[in-house]
Length: 158
Image 1 (tube, rainbow, N blue to C red):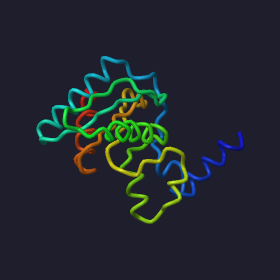
Image 2 (cartoon, rainbow, N blue to C red; image 1 turned 180 degrees about the vertical axis):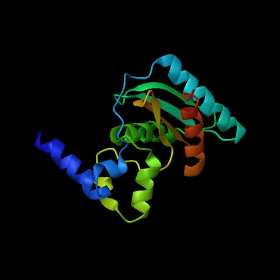
Image 3 (cartoon, one colour; image 1 turned 120 degrees about the horizontal axis):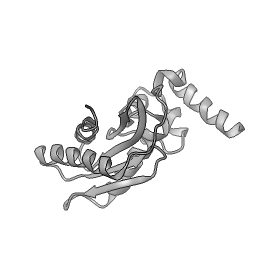
Image 4 (spheres, rainbow, N blue to C red; image 1 turned 60 degrees about the horizontal axis):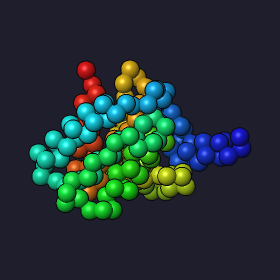
């Protein structure tokens, strides 16, 4: 129990308060494979529109990989990066862009949170006001990774 309070304390120190950073949404049932594929299909369409070669990964609300696609020309290192972005965003219930902004603002203690990935490209997947998973994209510049991941997340919106 002490470890949990220490981790929460690190997050609170990094961001002033947990609610100021982490979304106040509960985790929901894990995203299913069909929905994960739908999200990746939308992200992949954005990737092709931008003429990029990325890896796109979806993790469920428990942080487990559900689906992953790597473009033919995407670097091998993009696999771990895409999964890492997704897991990091899931762990704190906030997009990795928020972690990146904290680091750029000089608030480096966020890097003490296990799994922190301070690079844009991890975006929450929300359904019925619950986090059901996260999409992570990697292989281009961070704003492009973020745009591709956001396009995928938008596929779940009604």
